Length: 146
Image 1 (tube, rainbow, N blue to C red):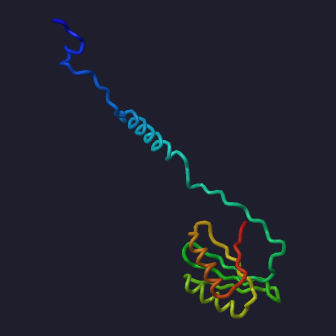
Image 2 (image 1 turned 45 degrees about the vertical axis):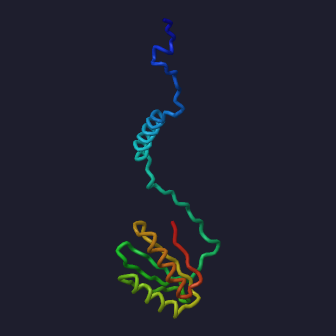
Image 3 (image 1 turned 180 degrees about the horizontal axis):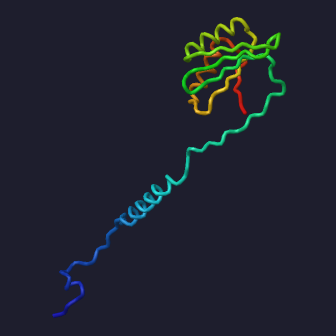
């Protein structure tokens, strides 16, 4: 009786699997996921560095200044003028601001508008004020900077 190495295993030859073992790749991906989840809160994405704006070469001598405040109130100041004096008016909300700006624009159609917004105000409110001024037909609308 002769025994061969193949007969001791039941007569079957050894077959190789042709599948890829993905378990180590899953382990590596989970470790990377944990690293990114831990390191993501460490960076502060809330800090935005805004550019400084330079002054125009020749600022207007007469303009309407709108000071927007976080509590939805606003102040309209007409500066300059022929006699150098200006007028000041306040608006309790944005619709009242639009009405008073329309009246000032009707009296002074060529006067530019400068918008100065508080640091705590939402950016959307500034954009809405610029949009309202443009809808009224005001050609020159600018933003006041430091």
